[in-house]
Image (cartoon, rainbow, N blue to C red; front, top):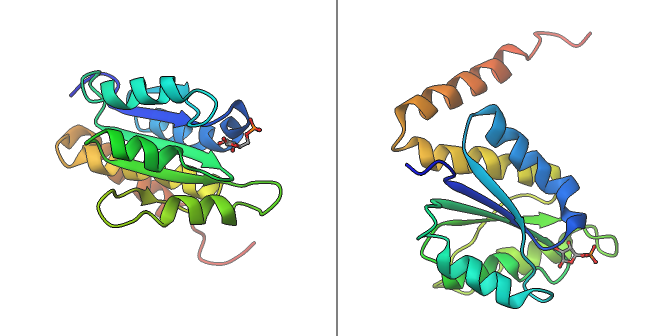
Length: 160
Ligand code: RP5
């Protein structure tokens, strides 16, 4: 497996406060990653080049976060055979429902695995990317299993 199997991309610097939660999970699990700002409408040439080269660069999974008219995950998915996980970033005007609908409603044929709006979605995108990679990486599978076990152990029997 390449040293940076996960690409975490986002449409804007303003998405970082959400997407950093995906990166934190990848770091906790020791999953190599690269993080980039790639905007479908502000930097369409960068988006096209990234998506066309992503597989050759050694990426195995792409996590793409965007808000509003969030076409980045779908556009990237149309340009690469790699699995794309979409994170709807919470928008100011519509609280991310617009982002969710934009990302989740892909027409049949070009899938985007869509997560929840905001921090939960970014966190789960990191976990899901790790789970995908863990199907062919036993050491990662063990780290992921330990991560989940620790979460289970942290749940108290009763509220304090
Ligand atoms: C989208 O527009 C980005 O993904 C971001 O969520 C949203 C707002 O971008 P900024 O105006 O904050 O750069 O492209």
